[in-house]
Each structure stands twice: as structure tokens, then as C-alpha cells.
Length: 275
Image (cartoon, rainbow, N blue to C red):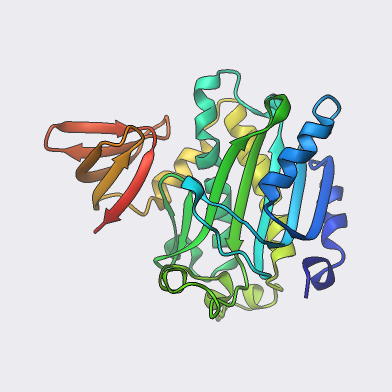
């Protein structure tokens, strides 16, 4: 069953929020980021932003580093295209966009999960973990006209039985964690469309706060950092590997690592292992 069939009112709810200026919702695409890029190439001079591109199924979904994102129906998959007017004035802060977006995702997922305050965590630089397993990932890319494309995948109601073994071992889906003794949570219908509508409101808030110089996103990371206090092995953006104890995230969004040589502030890289 496709997203529009699950809840035909979701599109209207999204547009009534007034933030999204253009909505493209397809049953099947190669990737929502690619569809957004193509749209921006055609309409860069007159594009109405923010624009939202949603798909029920991605045939070639990608994560960071070109990794494949398992994205069948039940996985919320979308790309939000925003213009420079929603970015901070100084370009040096633009690299924080993935972390800002991840803060919104984590808060959204936590709002649907019993004891979400404790069970939902953020793994630098942009993954959301639920009960110790990956639930969401983000890929930020550039588009025509200076737009930024925020590609987000969230496992909402995913059947992992046909997924590769590696995915089954490390991933989880929100529906596996929603049973609750709290009637207010059980009464909410968990489907990708409803999660999307909730998340857009949070993205609007966190991106707007960040653009105006606020740090609401940072407080979320400081509360939810999965890696704080753990021993990490990291491959930095320049290829260097570092070992050390994680001290959390600084105000620039860098991962702080206490190593034998001192404290390293890592602006980009990949966490290879943690314990």
C-alpha cells in the first residue's frame, strides 16, 4: 500500500502547514535526491523553495559515501530542497546542515517511541539510532542555483526479511518499538506519511533557528550523542585514522576525540567502530 493510499490527507496537511512551496510525490524513483536535482536544473531560475520530493520506493537509494540505502515501501524517503535564504549568512556554517537535520529527525522519532528520550540517540555525523540500531540516515548534497538537498530515509514500518544480512543485523524500524502502556502513543497511527508531516514542522523549526544563529540543534546532539564516553576508531576526511575517547560534539559540529596526542576536533570523517 503506497503512502497516499495509507493517508490521503497527508499531502493536504503538508501544504496547509505553509512552509513547503512545491510537493512532488512519486510511487517509485531511482532516488529522491536525483529527482530533486533534475527538477532544480529545469526550474533553477523560478524554483519555489522549500520543495519536497517523496517516494514510496527508491530503486537506487544512497547514503553517505555512496552506500546503498535499503528503501522498500514502509521506509519514509524524501528530499527537502532549500534555498540560500534558509542558510546562515556565513558559508562556514553550512556544513552543519546534516547535523541540524539529524536533530529534527531524532526528536521526531523520539516523539513516536515509548521512552524515546532514553532510547533514541544520534551517531555523528547524521544517523539516528533506536534501541542501539540504525533507524535513519541523511545525505546532504548541492543542487542548481545554490540549493541544498537534504535526503532523509527513516525506517518507519519496514520488513527487513528480504534485506541483505548486514542490514538485518544493524537496522531497526520504528514499528518494532511502538507498543506502549501509554494510550496517547498507541492511539497514533504510525505510517510514513504521518511521520513526514510531523518531521517537516521540526525541520522548519530547527533549520530556522540555526539560520538565525540559534543552537537548538546542538542541545539535542549533546543530550543524544551515542558516542560520548566511548572509545572510537575514526577515519578522517583526509584518510588519517584516529583512536580515542569521544568527548561529544562542539559548537561547530565537530566530533571531539581525546587521543594520546591531545584533543582532536574532527570536522568530517567516518566512525569505523565504537565500544
